[in-house]
Image (cartoon, rainbow, N blue to C red; front, side, top):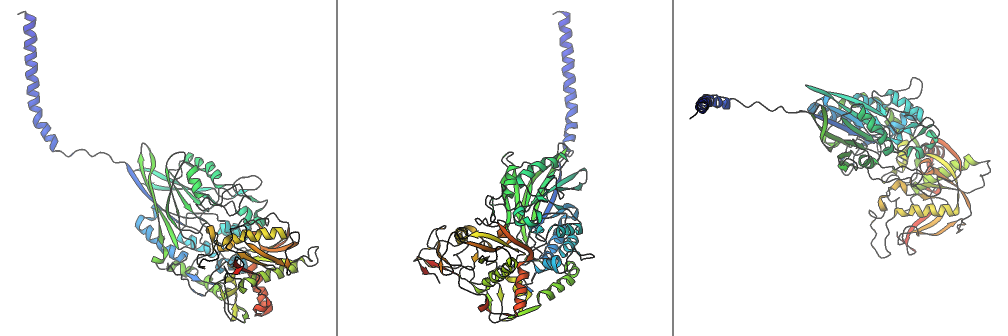
Length: 603
């Protein structure tokens, strides 16, 4: 064998032995290492944020019914008021940590109860040295972080709204409330809140506020030429990318807009009234939407964004502080950034807790002043008047509204070229429980009859337009065949039409044939005992909501306006009763309309 071959074998043998020896020596070491605990895999940082939300508070601080002068109660056992919400918020903050929670509102705060009316009109916050609005006091004390503008924020004019805004310790947001001339935001569009996380960068949460385009219609007298209200989807698409560019890890939208995708103003505006779900569907990078305006309860609604496929969670708490929405947002820190991992929502019922004594003590004096105000006696009634059947029978209590409106408009037009025209009036059965008792009549009795802060407008209409108006209104009734049983609980609100979008019209006589299809129901329509002349001109005394297009009634929004005022119809009713002294149906009541089926009266 050659020498070099022997060397190779020798070397290989040695090397092999060396390997074997090393392996034998390593075995005990590996065994020892196996006994050591495995090095833990580093887990990503996580953060849990809780977002709380209210909406459509409408001046409800206490669980109190100013119209009944008693604790609020309903058949469902609900409770109302920010004092209850405060207790729920305190409980959740204690559980989650105040530093991990965000409290928002989706609008409609300063209108809706005698409490809010009192501090807008009787003892106004705009007066020199005037009071701080009770809603500002309550929301500041509870510690709101932001609120969106609601449409009812504009009901008392921009001066009152700006004063209320100045009294808040948190921003009033409205990305789509813009200056009419410059189109720049007239209110803060958004706010960004920072939440600290130990061992990780802070979480940035952006809140974008959006309000309702219908403000341009409903409060035209206050905002025309001053403010404009473009669509929610359009403005969200503009602002959400900016919020992401500013480093927002979470984007919450507080929208005073329902989720149904419908509108009450027909084609008067190119924007959708209830577009919260459309915003979630069309605009990427939104994580959750606090929904308002529609007064419905939505614990959780999931909408898939059309561009990203991401699920967006929406929630709407019931109005008047009856519910609190709770969003649980889970985030994870990976690859140098925070990402929203999941969002879930629910609503809590405020009837499960007691009032927060801090809030009741804070506003006890204001509450007492308003109770005394609404209990002032302004006259007496010869009999009890009620709205219980006013949805489907011509009720004298609604005739009181139309009579007051007729008288006010006639007086306003006296001496003008329109003084000789007949005045007719519209009114809606706003409440199903309002009652003016026989005997002493108070401001609260009359206020319960007209729960909105509407004002009066005079519009010029023709007989043909009035006929179309009545046909549209009659869509409110469910079509009921002549031989069918009539259930009054199911007779109205066809296609979800609310009671406030059904109108009486005084000064005419007519039948509504509910056996007929909508659009063909008005029968035997007369004026002055003869068939209505389509060319006849009338002055329609109408509330500003309807006059500006609310409810999308035909012709009225585009009709010539002859006169308008800023005094509330509710106040005009109180003045009328005070001047009369005695409330007697013979002074205002008449049977102008009735429901029929094939010519036979339903009742």
